[in-house]
Length: 226
Image 1 (spheres, rainbow, N blue to C red):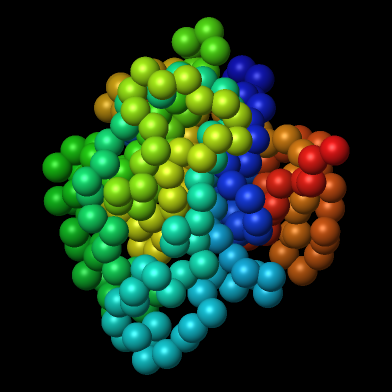
Image 2 (tube, rainbow, N blue to C red):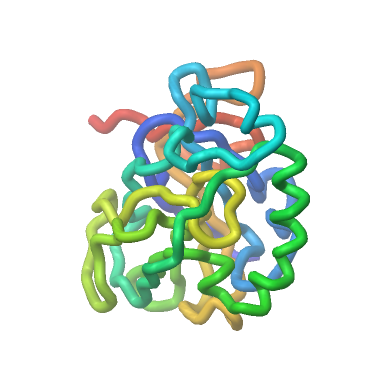
């Protein structure tokens, strides 16, 4: 396996780590669409809650995406690079924490896969890193918030869009992956790591991390700059 690409976390504030390659590879249980080393981050508040509201809808129905901490948070470029692909126009659908609502959503999974990468990734941006041999995709972005266009040069930390709930997403979050191609159907995943962050492992922390991949279920935030 090649050395991991060292990236900046693509946000500010605290986010919960899910589907981390620190737990398993392939991280999402599949090796398609360049997802082998992908990681998901769900925004949380200072109490590490993904949403500040729980009610009857949480138990038996869908919930508005707007009630989740992630929704609308800025998503930033994890490295300097060139925008090679932008897709917008996929709707941000309602979120699902209820097992009842999740069953129906799971039954639609095959249909989303048949409709192709845009139905799975939702609104997304693909960056080519310097050298052109590695690409980073940021996925499930909020409709109408993408600030970049293909061919544009972006700086590390520049805002690309807002976090949304488009594509194959049960609640607002950002999915990040590195690949050897910008073409999702043929891309192979590349290992990644993040630098300069604080990690709150489950039941512990905070820990200062110079670099690494956060553990499953830990909360992370970029370390303050100098």
